[in-house]
Length: 240
Length: 231
Image 1 (cartoon, rainbow over the protein chains, first blue to last red):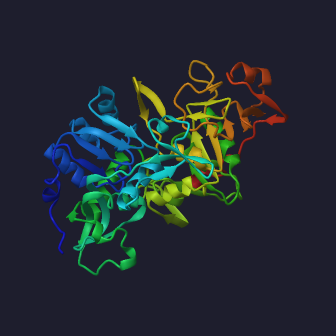
Image 2 (cartoon, helix red, strand yellow):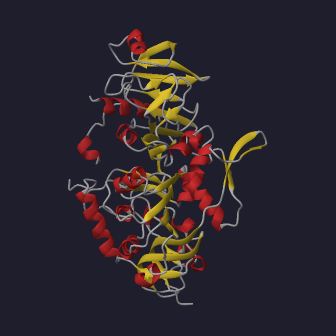
Image 3 (cartoon, each protein chain N blue to C red):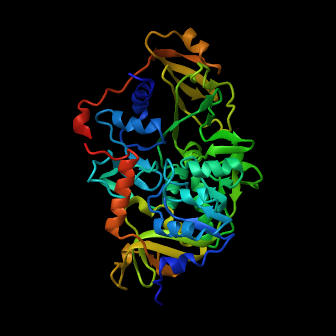
């Protein structure tokens, strides 16, 4: 089955009030063109599920979703990098649910893997344990963390074929393969769409069975340029 | 030498050859610059790699290769890349030997607070990121912080006032004035900077502590020989 559609077609499926998982880590490995389109569409009351928030300093990545007042709830491990998100949280526009990052990813993995939850010692003795069931297994205490899934997942890969097989590149793999498994509808934004058979099977990071749609994001060259400009502008990369 | 460099150079001495090491956001990242000669550690970035190296020069960066702070990194020979679930299996599974984390507060029980600053009633920022996983499961947890805040008040408290990241999890506390070990839930003063007495440390430390019988002067890793050549 051919899964190639446009970004407009993919993002048009998202409605007010939907839950949306976003891959990426401070903009790296993030489906930037899909996020941009979500901002343009202006769908409201979204629950955004992402490991961390927008690129440090704001103005990029998912920051406009917050300044555009589209986020009802954020579920992740960290919010403080993105001033727009912190402001929305502080003012009460956005509710925030925080988990230790390893717990956050395991909740999603559980959802995608048919598990009823995970038992973890992380968070014991902290605010994280509030309201959670505690279980003692072979003399050790654990928190029961429940599965976390979403209606949509937007992931970012390097290449995808028309069956939806995704190849990742570099450290940008991140949460992408895990969230791809835990949504009703998963969209893979990639640098390049290739013919079936062009991705070596062992290089497939997310099998196409988890992917409902493949969309062309920025090209590889455009992506490199955009991030270079961002890193230079924000003082993270200097000519030496 | 400023306080941050002092702390980074002392913290670098906590690393042993062959260790898997995670350096937290902020001040801990500077520790990588002072790893003693002959000590080779494998640095983890929790977004998903082992074996990262210095910040690349403009033109040598890769948009898909960055650390958990969103900064470009280079990958050294022998580096490996993995997804986030694997990265936290590494941490939670106890495969990290040493984690060095910045702290807002530490206390006399070896608890650390570094994730939650109140921004409104019941609301905290910035969030714990991977810090709870690291404090909960790394074999050795090193907390680094300035000894006092801008007003001169101790950040080594009897009990943390901020929500804790981990309760009784810290093994070593390194400040710009002193080094403490946490042994059986109690602080033991191990090192003091030159020219400072134990009484002076007591005066700026809210928590109770014992003094090690072999108390010594604050040790420092050497500054890198040729900074320009290493980057």
